[in-house]
Image 1: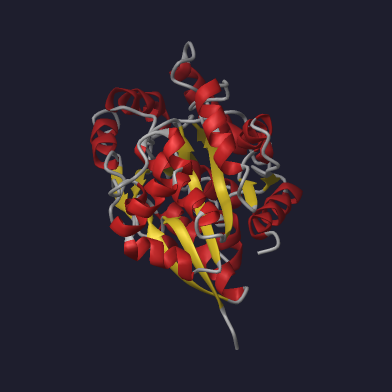
Image 2: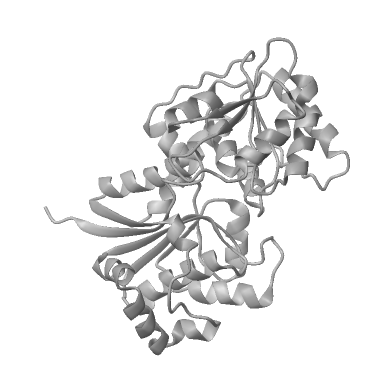
Length: 361
């Protein structure tokens, strides 16, 4: 049987937290089911400078730069040229003008322009300016690269709006984590007596983490446990331990749970009475498992995007007046409410949208 070769760019299964593992493994498994054998470049490669990388926007179209890049990066270029499909797992990387997005955009463009490959960008959020606001130079650059790709699938509605503004015919999809949860049959075991689960987030500094914990301290009474959820296959989020220590100074009974596998990570979220988080995948996991949740924003409007799709209240931003009181009130409501967190028809719709990441692949 002839099998096709897929190269995944920005593979996140081994880094940061277990939500990244779940979404990347779902992509991997789906590709295998579709007849591919799969190679990948890890997310660490995305953020490690490659030699002879273009330094200016016009360099993307320079054949001389491409030749120098090829000579200096033969293992990567060989993986691209041997692939039938180059698939970029964009996740939250594509925002602003930094090394990670610059390098990822060039790898996709190189695969399309110089290696003539089928190139798909899936499971991603895109915010060239870092927000919903336009930025003429960065918008134009992103648009000029992405318009050449064979598939652009955006995982939430705000990114889709941005891409449409750039002239990109983006497919509306959703993150692949709910597909992973459904595939593996994790039970929904939400308990009103379960622990309150906290996590940090890339948008929180230590001071804000402490203020968040102070807002939740009154809810951690009696026998109710409070747990800070961390953990990854390797290379965990570097801010987690600092955020935990800051939160514990406000909630002395707070426990650290460093999940050693994704089963534990999902089971902890699924059995909680409440999740309070500024993390994208923690929020999606809670919604998929019908765990009551209160969320804060991330470093781009991606959580606002999924909340809109899931029918959830938008994130509570620390820039809002009385934000701690709002977090406490929203958490109290979530603990009292017995209605499903997300309607079943919406949960089914996001599974269908998740499959749109693989349209015609």
